[in-house]
Length: 191
Image 1 (cartoon, rainbow, N blue to C red):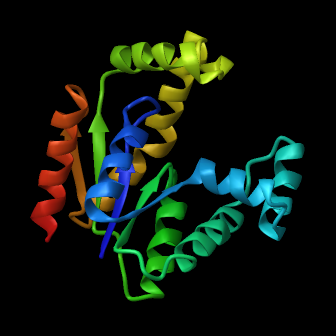
Image 2 (image 1 turned 135 degrees about the vertical axis):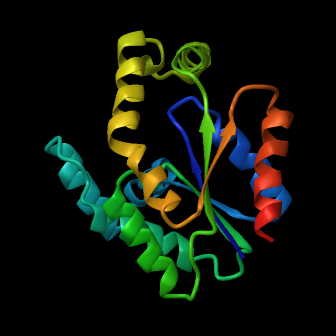
Image 3 (image 1 turned 180 degrees about the vertical axis):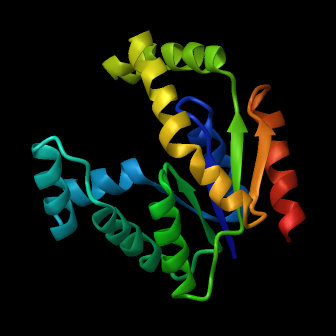
C-alpha cells in the first residue's frame, strides 16, 4: 500500500500529477475540495455541518474534514493506497491523518513537495484562469495571497514529516512527463 501526500502551493501541478499516479499505482485520489463538494452536494450529515460553518464564514473544523476523509478511505477497502491532495494543511491535520491511518495499521509513506517559484505559479494560475471560470484565478493579488498563506500556514507540514524522514522535495518545473518521472523515482525508492 502507498499512502502519499502530494504537496505544493496552488498551481504547482498536484492535480495534474495525481491523475497519472492514480493510473500507474492504482491509488485513490483524495482531494479535500472534491470531498467537500461530494458531502455538501449529497447533503450528508458532515456536508450539512460543513455548510453551517461556511455559511457563517468560519473555517470548517478539522474533525468534520477528518470525518469526510474517514468516509472516503473506508469506502475503498480494496485500494492500493491513497494520494492526499490538499490535506493535511496544518500540523494538527497531519497528526489526525496519522491517527486515522494507524487505525488500519497504515501510515503516510511520504510527502512529495513540488517546488515551483512564485512567478511560475502566478503565470500558471493566470493561464488556468482563462478556462477555469474561477475569478480568483485571474486576480494576481489573490494568487499571491494564496501563495503567502501556503508558505506561512501549510509549509510547516513539510517539516513535520521531514522530522519523520518522510518528506521529499522535487523540482516541479519542466514537462508533465519529466515531473511525473521525478515523483515516480521517489515512490519507487520506498518500495
